[in-house]
Length: 182
Image (cartoon, rainbow, N blue to C red):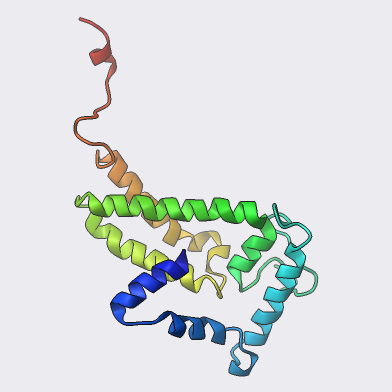
């Protein structure tokens, strides 16, 4: 999903998929330095740990004994999506991805509504996209205080839904007084 969005927006900005591939690939190139060797070791260890339990993973908070970055937080790894696959398996990845797809789907509905809230949704979705891309190699979403890029669009979506933006004017809610004959 991220690659499709990056391809679409990249074509608008004159960027290519091969350039994106080179940028992402350099994060795992040991000759490039900057922690690439550690990321490659983490990814290999997480995939080896995921293989015995591919459907449901090893459970949230679990870690592989092959690579431990921190003794006080052994479950903390840089590669968030590899860690999510390791911990939640294919089923968990599908469920988490469905939540992100819902967030963007509803965000696009808000934007298409052309309401006053839609003006705010565009930069919020762009920021969320950037945050999710950066989260691939940095552990941003591992702490509760840094989950705001996911909850901010949800807050705007709720604001839109509560301000009658999520319903058409013809489908109003029937109140008790409307249902009871006078």
